Length: 76
Image (cartoon, rainbow, N blue to C red; front, side, top):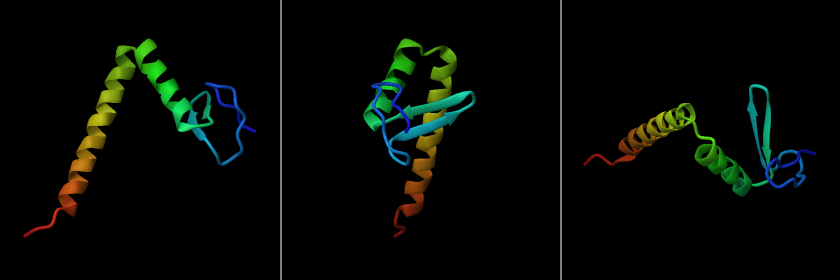
């Protein structure tokens, strides 16, 4: 059974959030624990490298959403 790295709760396989990264696994029993971990990572230990990559990823996701919305727009 996986164990949440934030609160220590055990959860069943197929539940929770499990992120595979080089060197290990990040296991969270809920989205709230994953959010807490991400907030701690970015606010407390957020180096310029992590912040820069996060902003670049956010820009890419926004542009993908804009393209998707443009495709959905009804042409009159």
